[in-house]
Length: 180
Image 1 (cartoon, helix red, strand yellow):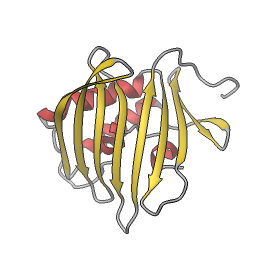
Image 2: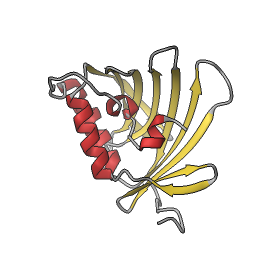
Image 3: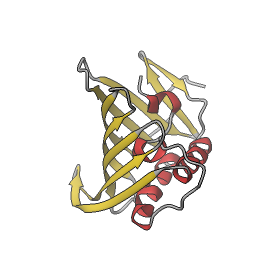
Image 4: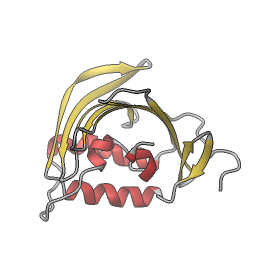
């Protein structure tokens, strides 16, 4: 299972939230504000996330599902839904800390597009921490201000390179039945 789904850190995508590191905090660069705001909104908005992860070494892609609803996060693991110990507030706190400690955080609006017929703004981002380098392309809904799609390339060092593709859904989202 991917680092993102094990720890329940949101992705903006993973790239904005897996940042960690140097001693001096930095403010969010102006060009990243809209993307960071979209990621923060995602953390607290009920949604479903469908993730496919491939590694540079090949092999079958791994697929994961996440539901955020009712102030909790749920992960589908080995066919069974489980509640994550990470609350949305914990994720927001972690994201803020990671952004503040990033070595590199840059973003760029690269154009307009559509996802499932919905108008979006497309952004790219680049983040670097002590442990990871991430490049992402994120499609953010113009009307809702929420990410609808995210494509990420991660390099965690030592030859561990991954591509993660995530799509989000926001309609009729409920906690999985029977999970406490």
